[in-house]
Amino acid sequence: MIVRIVIFIVVVAALAAVAVFIADQPGRVEIEWGDYLVELTPAALAGAVALIAFAVAILALLLRWLWRGPRAYRRARLLQRERLGYQALTQGLVAAAAGDATGARRLARRANHMLGEPPLTLLLSAQAAQLEGREEIAQHYFSAMLERRETEFMGLRGLIVQATKAGDVPRARELAERAFKLRPDTPWLLNALLELRLRAGERDGSNALIERARRVGAITPESAARRSAGLLYDEARAAFGAGDHRLALKLAERSAATDPLFVAAPILAAEAALKLGKRGRATRLVEAAYVRRPHPALGKLYLAAAPNVSVLDRVARLERLVALAPGHPEGRRLMAEVALEAKLWGRARAELDALIKGHPSVSAFRLHARLDDEEHKDALAARRHLEAAASAPADPAWACASCRARLEHWALVCPSCGAVETIDWREAPGPAKFDPASERAAPAVLPPAPSPAPEPASAQAASPASGAPSSAPSTAAPRLTEPPRPDA
Image (cartoon, rainbow, N blue to C red; front, side, top):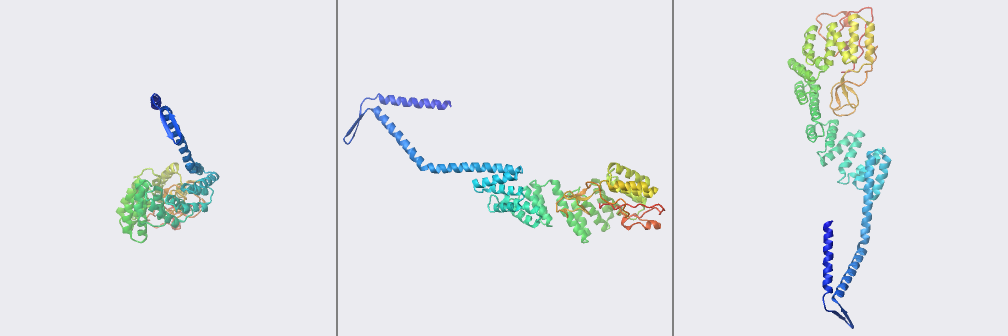
């Protein structure tokens, strides 16, 4: 500011000095033009020249305004229209984010009118249509976005989401493959494409896609390990089903090494090892897996690895396994059942009481009802435990976190809802639903113990579905058998 004032003062002083200098000059200036003779002093001539220059400048500015004015006016109007259009677009995006479908649609129309459908107005119009539930109109806008290079990727994302919601997996995958060619390192796209490929049953190239998704942060390292292990597990299960137990064992062990907490892999590996007669290897696989994550199937396989032992030896063998994870509910449940087979009533009662106190479940109450019936023939106490089982939490099972479906074994893709990596061994929410008065025998978790001596006739009448013969003779009092247990 001070510099400008100083410059102004200097300029004014210079002009004043020039004016004084010209005024002090002696002499006259004569201008003869035809019959006219004009005589002027030097100062008057300088003033006349200045006035003429000023008039010429004003005239030039006027002509310039007349020439460029209309164009500048139109440009100003267009800029104002554009400003108001982008203002409407911004407000429309805010309304769409807030869920105001009516406001978003109104502002989208205004933005379209003022801006002539730029890329973002197409997106806003599609979002407004989606908020109102008009998916066909939204699809129209998303399809229009595919015709513009700058909006093609956004349009593909909208169409992928629509196809996924509609359950059109082939269409969603086709669009995802097209989007992958445009931006192959987009996190959400990598995750979506991987899930779509898995749901379509395509495993080729999935490992490379998993690694790429992990590298760009689309999935966590734990999720990447679980999915890679799941792919190996699927191959191992296919080989097991085809009778190639050697290949199944190899692939299942690789799966377990990829994700040590993935308990389904060592279970399948132990099953394959037993099929090949490798009992020691199966035992080592079960022990290593049980330390990390106890599972009832591991106990079953651990006992199956030593089939020709007495009932008491089975108890001692299982004790060695459950000691690897002391106090775990699965270990208590396994010990309670094998103690019941061995008629070790005190041990069975201690395990079941601790289990019911810390982790009550359907199987815990039903095993306690079986204990009441076989030890004391106490039908009333057994009935109370069966009734308690009706409202008890369900036993852990392979269940989907998305649709809550309970499955026989683990799967990478839920066969019920198609969700990926949502199945795990978990406790189901809420009580299990079954009839406590059911007289059908339940399948046993553990394999049946070998019987060195013939069983009484009443034991032979036990249901073959239980897998474990009864050890108590028949009495006049009515016997209570366990209701069917949920699949574990």
